[in-house]
Length: 258
Image 1 (cartoon, rainbow, N blue to C red):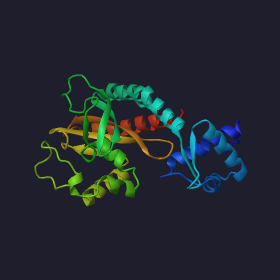
Image 2: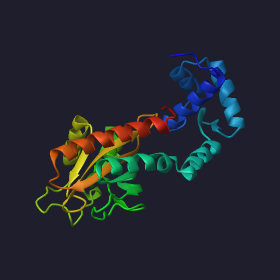
Image 3: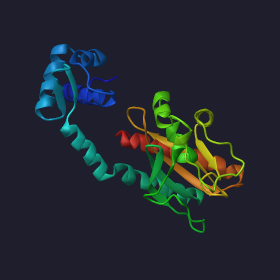
Image 4: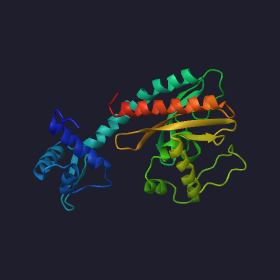
C-alpha cells in the first residue's frame, strides 16, 4: 500500500473508523495496537479529537468513544442522502436496460425501507414505493443485505419465530419461517451471489437483488429488479448480472472510489 500523502490525517481517520466499528468505547492502548500506531501518537491524536468533539474520554473506564461531532457527521450524511443521489441513476439505468422496474432499499431493523423506485413502462405497479417498509426476510433486497450480516447480528434480529412477519399474498403452501429456514435461504444467497424471491411479496412477481457494501463490510443498501414470475431464463440471468454490477458500482462510489 502506498504511503499516505497526509499521514496525520490518515491516522486520525483510521482512529475514527476503528472506533465506529467497535461495539463500545475502547482503551487507547488497544486502539494503538489495532492500528499499529505509537502510543504517544495515539494519545496526542485522541486529545485533538476530544477537543474538537469527535471523541469523548470516559476517565472512569479509561476508554475513548465517538463524540457528538462524529454523530453530527453521520447526521449530515443522512441529510445529504448520498445513497439516494448516487443510487437513483444506477437504478434508472437498470430500468432502461432491462425494461423492468427497479428499486434501492436500506435495512432498518427487520424491515427494508425503499429509498428509490423506478417504474418501467407498461409494467404492473409495485408495493415497494418510496417510504414503504416490508419484512426484510421476504424481499430480495432484504435477503441480499441479511446474507452479509455476521451470524450474531442476524440472530439478534431474529431471536424467535415471533420475529418473522408473514404476508397474506405469499405462497399458500410455503413453510413457516424459522431461524433455520432463514439461514438456509441466506446460504443460497451467498452461494448464488444474488438474492431472489418468487411471489412472496406480490403474487405473480419475482425479484433479484444484490447488496451494496460499505467500507466496513456491512450492507449499506441493496439494489433489486422486479419482473413477472415465469420470465425467461435469459431475463433472469440478465437481471442478476445487472443488479450485481449496479451494486458493485454503488459500493465503490459510497466508499469514494471509482
